[in-house]
Amino acid sequence: MFILDALIKLGFFLYFVPIIIFIAFLFVFVFWKFILIWAAFVIVAVLFQLHNEKRKAQLRDLEWKAKLEKETQRSLLAQQKMESYRQAQLKKEPEPLLKATGTATFIPAAGGEEQKINISITIK
Image (tube, rainbow, N blue to C red; front, side):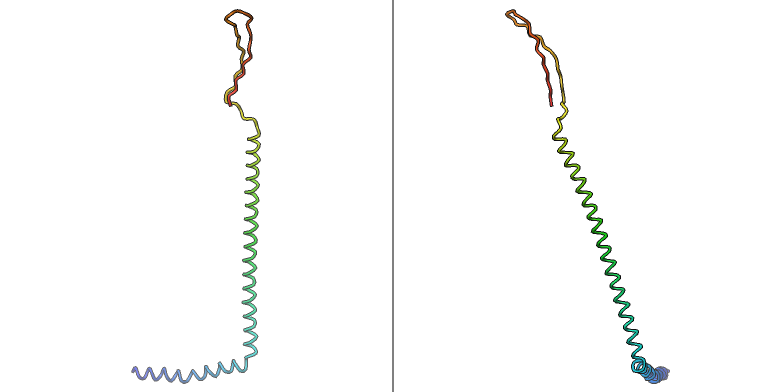
């Protein structure tokens, strides 16, 4: 049984392989122009697709660079604003922690005329 199956498979193989080879040669020698045209279309389509993918990648890179530049500009502007605010705070007179004013009367012990003294105390 095994031998018969093997012979049948061998017969199919020996019968169909020459037909397949003949059809392949027929396509190669008779339809070679069509095969070349089809291959050219395939190559052009693949190259076009690769070109499109490259352009998409370039556009993504440009968008990313523009976004990065915008964020950098925004960050620099915020940094400049903070620096100008700090400079303004440094130039501005700081608020005193304690400010007191008053008058004191000085009476000499030996006698004499009493004097009034204005006193102003500021603690910064």
